[in-house]
Structures are given as C-alpha cells and as structure tokens.
Length: 442
Image (cartoon, rainbow, N blue to C red):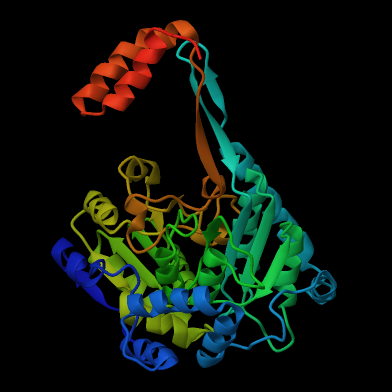
C-alpha cells in the first residue's frame, strides 16, 4: 500500500484532519447492516436512538434480539457469577497478573493525586463537597481482543473516587468471559460483570433492565456505534467523555528516529475502527523516511490489513512550514493523543491547548500511556478534546454546593437578593429574602 503524503497547511486541513460534523464516522456498509437490525433504513443516530428506545421498552429481550442480529454471542444469562469469574481468571497467563498489578498501582497512585478536596469558607459561609456516584457502568470492547488495560483504566479511577458499585459490560465468547478480562476485573476490584456489549450495553446501563442495573455514570470506550450510543444516553446517565475510535497525531522533526514515528503510528492504526494515525513534520525528506518505515513495518505486522485500512481511510503524513504551524493544526484537530517527537518537545508543549493526552519526547511513547504510565488511556475523541477531559475520578464524582450563612450575613445579603429578584419580576423571591432581613419568627 502507499501512505498518503500531503504538503502545506491547507492540504493537511482538507485531507488529514478535516472533521465533517460527525462525532464518529461510520461507513456505508456498516450503516446498511445496522438498518437490517430493525428492518428499516436508519442513520447512525437514528439507529442508536432506536436501540435505547427498544432496550427501555423490552429490557433483556431487546438485548438478546439486538445482539443476535448484529452477530454477538448471546449467553444463557448476562451476569457472570463470582465462581465463573474465579474459574476464568485462573486460566489467564500465569505471568500476566504481576504486570497488571504494576500498571494498576501506577494508575491508582495517579488518580489518588487527582482527587479534589472539599472546602468550606467560614468567612463567606459557602463551600463545596465532592460525592461519588453510587453505581458506575463501564463498557469494555472485546471485538479485537481482551482489553484488560481498559478495565484498569476505568474501574480503578471509579474505585479511587469512592463509587460503591462498579459494573462492567463486555463481549461474550462461546466459553463465557475472557480469562484476561476476568483477571483485570479482579485486580481492579470490579463488583459485577455482564456479557453484553455494543450500543445495547450502553442503553442497558443507562436505563436498566431485569439483569443489568441502571448506572449513575457510564464510561464507554469502544467503536463508533458505542460513542454514538453514549452520546444518546446523555441525560439518562452521567457522561463525561466520548472515547471512540482512536486518534494519534505525531508532530516530529528530523531529529527523531523515523522507525519510532512509524511504530507509534502503527501501534494505534492496528486498533482499526478505523483509527486515525497522522504525522506532521517540517521536512519533506523526513516525511519520505517515515513513509518508508511505515511500509516496512506493516509488512511484518500480524494485523497488517487492519492497520493498513486505518492509514488508507484516515491516516497519512503532512509536510508543513514549521513545527509551530504543526502545533496550530494540532490544536484545530484536538486529537485524542498528541505525541511530540522533536528535538525540543518542551517548547512545543507550551503551545498545546487541545488534546486528550500529550506524550513528550521519544521516551514517552503513547503505548506507555495505553498500559503503564498512570493516567487513564480513555480519552476524548472526535474533536471533543476541545472541551472534554480524559477519564479520571471526575467521571465518577459530582460536586455539591454548601451554603451555611450566619444570621448577620443573611441579613446583610437580603436586600441585595431582594432587589435582584424584583429586577427579574419575581416578587416571591424578593419577599423570601426580606424575611431574612427582618426576621419575624415562625
């Protein structure tokens, strides 16, 4: 295959980083398959809305019907029993547990540092408390492989936040739950696991069924259908991040090793979805070397076809006038991952405003962020990094304002509140305030 190379900022905007108003791009073949589920022509947004509607109306029956029509394995019961979880995790590779524990500890420490503090100001009489949601729902995709790392990256922040019950929904295999997922769920202290995935799993966690409990917050890494379903249930459950098909933008110059650049792009391209593996450089000669390395490394990749499809659909290399211009383009694109493989990455970091995560220098590859660095790898995609943050404790917390005014403050503020209320033509508000200005007793 040939890797696309474009020259100039305008070409990069048009051919590499253009977003067309869709949060998640779904090809025509996938749209047709989705329409077949309900026997009518539906847009992606209409499809996920109908999934939510059907699950709300028919519960577990809808989960079975929709799952069967999209080709999922349907278990005899959705919830995995504690005995089944134990038996499955005992089948996981014997040396994997210690590796997951290393990652889990780094994830736990990072998110403990992230926890906000309550406060109360005695002078002004106001403060804030942070409270965890009671139940968190987590979706773990499983089509491409058992993403144990995603279990750690979502459930551990929820547990650090103080969530009482953590629910995981993931794809079923013929043998039940994947042993690697079972092991990760144990290490992350997950409470319950259900074998249902995709848009219908998001709907189930948002509205509840006889089997799957309704969750107060949902974090759902997954494919384009999952991210659209997550957006659809906003307002039915807490949604703080929309993590869809992965995006990586590498800003690089001739000081970097082109093999490193290629490897970092391919690592994300092999997710499929399709992923968006993009590099920007200020050197046409270096761009050619990156392309050569991508083509060479792809030939040796087990998931070559998947990665090649990502490059063909949404990837490539852009040649721009300067590294500063590359940062400007990156801020416009707002990628999930931004990698700075340049001679002076700290200088560029100062100009970065929009990205889910920034990986600074060759020693901080995005793949470490995927597994062991510490911050959650569940990050905003589709340009939502302009206003959204990675998954963390805040995804599972809500703040509560506290107002505890003493009598003197209440009396002093009462006429101010009353005048503001009357300016808004709300006489009842004004009179309630004035009662505090001149208390008349019960």
